[in-house]
Amino acid sequence: MAEGAEEGVGEEEAGSRDKLLPAAESQPPESKTPKALRQEAQRKWEKHVICLALGVTKTNYVAGRKGNRSRGGRLARLLNRGGGGDYGSGPRPQPGSRKMLPTTSMNSRLQGNGALSSRDAARHTAGAKRYKYLRRLFRFRQMDFEFAAWQMLYLFTSPQRVYRNFHYRKQTKDQWARDDPAFLVLLSIWLCVSTIGFGFVLDMGFFETIKLLLWVVFIDCVGVGLLISTLMWFISNKYLVKRQSRDYDVEWGYAFDVHLNAFYPLLVILHFIQLFFINYVIMTDTFIGYFVGNTLWLIAVGYYIYVTFLGYSALPFLKNTVILLYPFAPLILLYGLSLALGWNFTHTLCSFYKYRVK
Image (cartoon, rainbow, N blue to C red; front, side, top):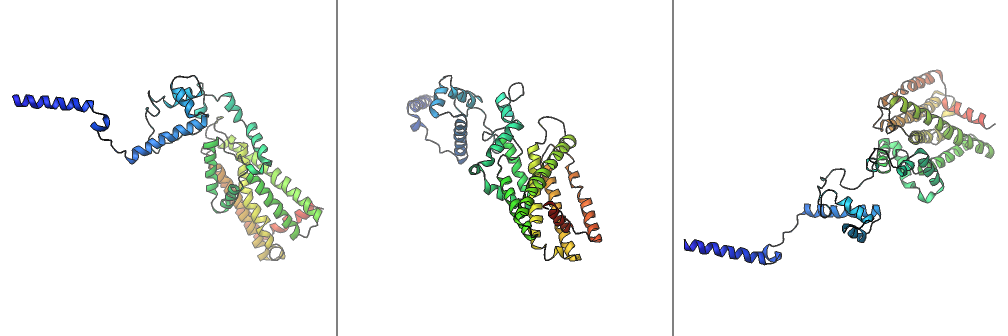
């Protein structure tokens, strides 16, 4: 019994000595796991991004932690609202969730009554977006021509990838339509060059070519484009939206972008590729001539219908977008009828262009 008591006293003394020793001596430091290091780096990165977004320095943040009524104080309360204490003391988001990094969304800008603040509402109106787009139209240094050229390439090879980028723009900038006019500028250049080539192939003079260029740019592209975009904008909002709401509507700018996307392959096929076959194949008044010409027209118009369908089917709040593919049936019927009757579409187009510039 005495020995047991002595052993108990010895253990109590050893425990008291351990309490008096520094933490570094009593418990050796444990190396952090890679997962813990990643989580710590993630927390530091989130705090850094939020500070940059709000324009708060580290000094202001520390001062806000001490209770100062400043922007740093609001940031400190924002970061610590998950729980008391230091940043990150609240529940952390799980890896792979959409809240790992701060993002801009409509819900984050909503007020308590469910409406946008006056500043955000003014910034997201159609007039504000149109003003921003037109303001950048003549600022070429702010345009991303490389990305616009990438879109033009993929409109031929994989149009779905182009509309996938429209989804990213909606998530980051809260609009479906383009905010960079670089695509429109490159399309205008393509239109001017191809029309000049068309005038050269048809043996038009200088002033006749300029007149044809003005007709093609302002009537065929812009005028018809505005008409088609407005018609598709009205039809999609009237009959294709799943539920009628202000939050679920097709932007007119997006409808115009869809038209430009669909118009570009048609322009390249009919105003560029076809130029190499007009004088030597298509205009020969033979079956091979109108077969090649009408086949190019079939491909070009088919591209326009398909890219238009992809543009509206990419919107998650639209229904029954498959009806946009229905024009394929009359298109194929008209193609077969033209071959049977010997109707050369390209010959008709050239005659119409010459009639315009008289």
